[in-house]
Length: 330
Image (cartoon, rainbow, N blue to C red; front, top):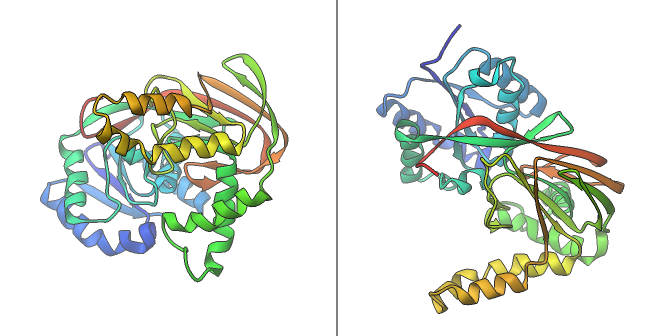
């Protein structure tokens, strides 16, 4: 059955502590007010089942799929679309209502709905009716898992694992971005140890230690950080940033917090540029393919969710994999 003129809305009802489910009636009402023809589906707790269900939905021929949820939800739905039995030119347009904790993908394109305000909801729906299309690249890990945001190895992934394992036991710091704070302290206290790595980046080999390695597709990382100004999600390249020790990692992350103040003090932005050069402690690379061999199995994350513990990863860029609906031409 071809549903080219119908939009499939895929909702994660648990997103933002179940605010997605609570706000669905207003979202539904506003979609109808904008004359959007749609069918709505819910994700389920089993991630594998969600991916399979999205693949089946995609194969029904919907002209557009909209994901309502955070970066993790976007990851599941994107993997479902990409694993559907369709030729690339038959894939539906993809749109998102970002309402998770970090919302890196949505934030990178000025699409925001973290608080479910009526204004945010209306703006996201207006993007569907008058937006433009962007050729979105995707990353692919070991020829099996796609990502739109990032693939990370090391410290950040270890923090994520500790946070997910311990936050239900806490009296405070259980929700939102604050839930990461105790885990960051725990891992910095010495519970995380760096692996050695051999990287083959676009055919060139290098050896290094890894405190935190991030392969980015979109520009924003961890809700607010821009790890390198040259990151683009439509250039056919992935961007690798490797922080070899905690000093490199903390100096760069910490400095980004004061850059807004520096812009006010120095309108010419020379001060900001000088500070950025002084703390550019990561090693930045761009490539279509990246091979990673680690000295020991290490924790990883994909699009802000726990991924495999492993020691061999091949990451490649799938150029212009999806047509993403965004607010304006970029």
